[in-house]
Length: 130
Image 1 (spheres, rainbow, N blue to C red):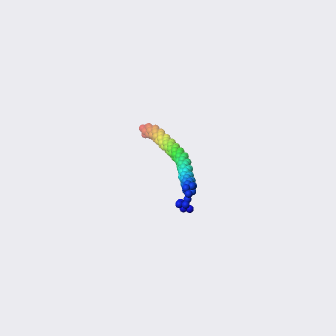
Image 2 (image 1 turned 135 degrees about the vertical axis):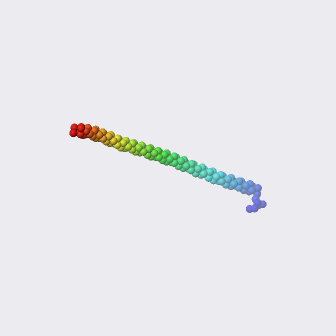
Image 3 (image 1 turned 90 degrees about the vertical axis):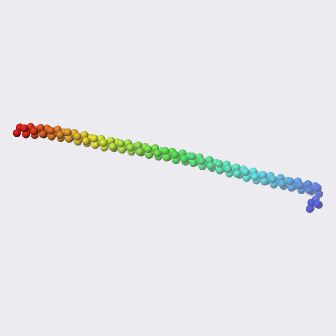
């Protein structure tokens, strides 16, 4: 029927039905908006948790890397110190040996000189007796 043929009651019923449909559509639209909002909230929450987990993992990794680097530096320092100590002992040993050889050579030369002096004295005494 056309609007001209409808009665006032039919028009009122039709208006009520249209308002009900409009309210139902509005309610569905709000539910979709709320659903999307909740979905976005959940997505953001998951992203935030993932970022927190990544940051925590990065912090743990960085701490382990720093600890490993520190340990390596300590080992290098210890190795260098040990090497220096060995070098000092080696130099000391060589110098001690060289000093000992020089002292022994000086002692030998002093004995040789003394022996020559004694021999010269005997030779001079023999030459004076002749």
